[in-house]
Length: 221
Image 1 (spheres, one colour):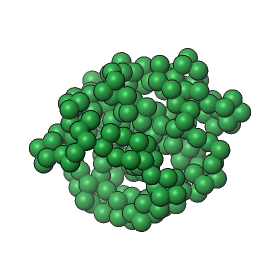
Image 2 (tube, one colour; image 1 turned 90 degrees about the vertical axis):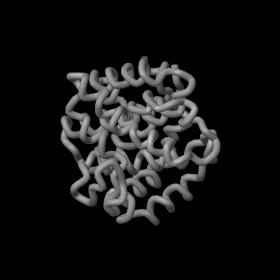
Image 3 (cartoon, one colour; image 1 turned 60 degrees about the vertical axis):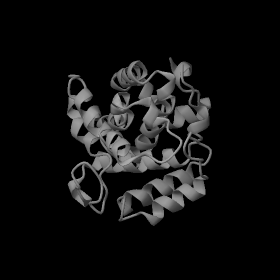
Image 4 (cartoon, one colour; image 1 turned 60 degrees about the horizontal axis):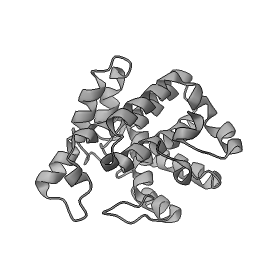
C-alpha cells in the first residue's frame, strides 16, 4: 500500500506524510477515488486529488488544526473533484476552448461531487466543503457566489492547493508552468480569487519545502 500509490523519499515521507497512512479515513478515501476515478480518462483527476490532499495537509499543519479538523480538510481535498466522474471524458480531455454548455457541465461537478459524498455515511459531512471549493474570495465564484469568510475555511484552502497543482501539471489542453510562475499567479490573485492570508501561508510553505516534489513521486496503481 505505502509504495503502490505514492512513492516518496523515505526521509521526507517520515517527516511530512507518514501520519496519513495511519489514517483509515484517508485510506478509505483513496480507495473510493480509485474505484470511481480509476479509468484512464480520469488519470489526471485521480493523481491531482492526491496531490491536492497532500498540499492541503501541509497547510492544515501550518494552521495548527486539531486532528479532527485536519482529517476533515484532507478528506475534503482528496474528494473535492470526485464529481468529475459524471462529466464526459470528451469534455474533460478537450484540447480546445469549452463551449458555454460544456463549461456549465464542468461546473456541475461540484453538485455531482456533493451528491456522491452525501450518500456515503463516512464522508457525508464533507458535502458542503466540496460544493464550495470553486467559490472565490471576491464573490465571483460558483455555485453560490459566496465571498470571503462566507466560504468554508477548508474550501478556501482546497481552492489554493487545487489551482497550484493544476497550474504546475501538464494537461492535454494546458502546458505546465514553473513553481515560480504558479506562486506569482496565486499572489496576484490574493484577495481576489483566494484568501490573501492563506496564499501567503502556502507560498511560504512551498518555498520552505523545495525538496518536497509531490508531483514527481505520485504513481497511480
